[in-house]
Length: 453
Image (cartoon, rainbow, N blue to C red; front, side, top):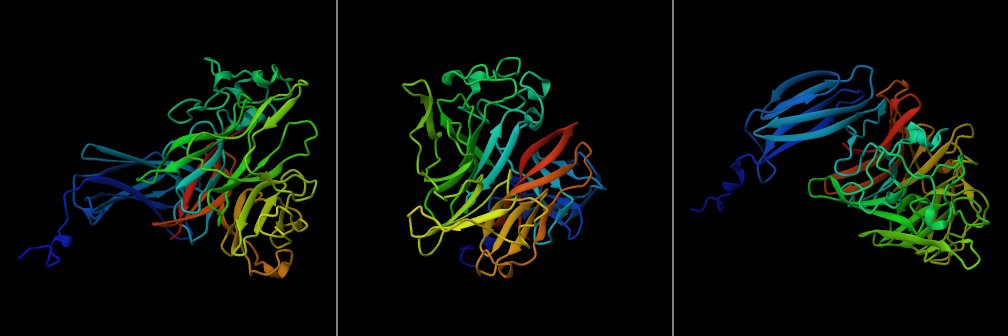
């Protein structure tokens, strides 16, 4: 008799082929377990060579639980990055837990996004595609302190992140980076070189990454403005649920007569380096921008518009929710009057309890009937009844999903933001930006992810 016919073969574990490492967090605690085990080619845990677990911080208690080796990590009163290494059978697996001050019990242990996403440079504005297959972010190869009261020639503006392959191939403005890790503070192609000392323009662009079979992200390619030496970038690049290849972003145009950041939308493949426009010099010697894909959202208002969440409704009309971090400090919305018309209802503010009059709300993401957003230094969620967004009765009191540590010491995480949520075969995943203190007046921004329980 064939053992497969009797259902026997499916129960017989194969030899170990993969060393797996994952995190689990207890409810209401910063402590977490790092769990390492051998998996066969069907993903079944099996016995194998002895596994060693090493954690670079915290109090660690290592033990066995069946075929798994488990390290229980107690961070104490610290937040930050905890690097965990599993070794065995000649294999090494590394993952990094992100310990925060507060994590809602509906979510597990936050961790660093793996692959080519995080670098010593500045990763910001992360956004995940609804299916979890593409990750977007904005990148500068300098620390945040460079744009915080420094000048381009100071050590705070040293180029610390990569500007070439494999992490950042075809980086716009890479040619401005000098061998001594400083950068030319100007835009030579546009005749803006040098710039006034009060203006600092390190190379900058948005980037797209593709999810790999192991869950990491690779294949980086820039989303950028061509012809400008990496001097200008969009921000808040985000996928449009309900659209096919649709994305939205904000851009503060440097052209004469610019009115501050405005929202744009287009259908883009993002599977190769993708220009959002081409800068040049017109016949009169002035700055021009051509070949822009899609269109600006004609919201008919004069305030700053940033971090757009745009969704296509069942009737084909678009809803846009956005922020104004430099002025109104609240969340706003508008509805398209007809499918594809690019004419909109008047912009209105989402009221309290969402928009707190004495706090700053920004970076909205609508996850079904829950609005996820940043308030000051934390990520919150408010349930929406489906009623008029301008009515307070349509909103539940926000609760904290992810919160930072109040301790500003080096190594601690003091801010989280930029939430977006994907649904994959493994379940729901919340992506976010964290800010970890790395020195006096210097915070490193990176991209984290946490899985729903």
